[in-house]
Image (cartoon, rainbow over all chains, first blue to last red; front, side):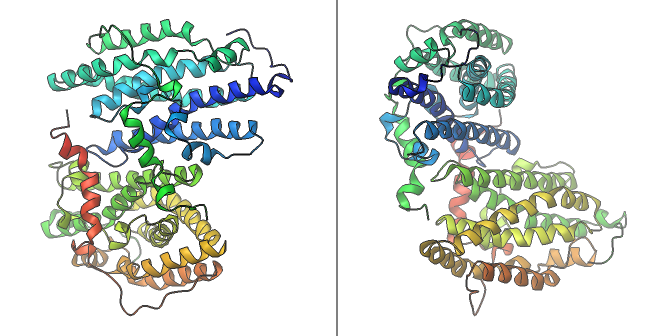
Length: 266
Length: 266
């Protein structure tokens, strides 16, 4: 990212730029929404109250982030829409989250690995976003970074405990690492909108962070006595709205109040 | 409740007293568990992010309370059990929550009315429990009272907004009041264990609080332009383990991690 310089005041008066910024905000915030939703599914499901509660707290942090990003979108759209409509009233293809965050809560190991793979990215992303040329994004990043660092500590600590724990926990968490690894690369993929925002100094250059990301994650896997998977290709598609089979079910679950009680904004 | 006096140190060395205290703690904390679980079901389900997040926060407060109470039980049982076993490994008949808290999330009005009916009770209960002869309970009550007061403010404010809102919101929330009213009285029913604890100065005399409860609730209903239902009899049974049809589904949901991934404490 270039050194901070304020956006030219006319930048967002151009429809194309505004459209790219909105897309970029969706690409970012939809990850928080879907991961927050996935974690919310675990609320009170046991078998352990303590991590249950911590995980629900993380879910709430992510949903709090979602609100800030969607509110910014609503503002950019001259309040012709609301954070709730953006969250709950889109079609599957319009959600731009990466495939990683839609992966299911297969077991506690999957929950922790998915979380750690996301948290490292998210903390690096928010850290870089504090240099954005867009003032609102700078302040969102500044507000979110502490929570993100806490999340990464939580998931990283658990990953070490599970990897370096019993034979069973090691085996199961290695399985989760092997299965989820293919979804990590998409976090760093560019889209037309993220490229446009990067060129304007609004978005961090994620490809630059990609190297640090793998260095960091691979180091922690080693500490956790886990093997770094070798894969031939990585999965992608979410950022373009091409989601896995799981996404439909997440949305069905997420939108059930709306569907069951239409006009429930009473 | 009698003025604070410490329990005789030999009181809990008698098995019968200890058994009653444990039952009494379950009667109290199971309400938090089941209501916390019910609220957790709403996490991220929309249609509005803001109350969603507030409700999930309340759910987390209640689950935090649960942990404290169950940890105390585990301690009384010389750590032959854990908070997680108490939360997740009992059979339906062994849960002692009142029927009110198992009632479903029919719509937002039901969620708010159920919450308000519980919150008023809970705040009064914790307030009185600060005078308990049992030191641990006094400190739990002291820690919980602020959250309880916040919950009551949240649900009471919403109840007023819905009652005194649109014609539809008024109609729907009146329906919720009418349907849930019959479950309020059980909150104040005594059991053998709560009676024993009341006599020992450990438990508040809930029958004394019952009058203040209805005064308070009826006043708020009036402010909300809602009618106080007239009923011939109240529902009960939960405190004795006789639950409604909903309870089995809540437990199935709650214990699914345990059932789907047995031995998941790895």
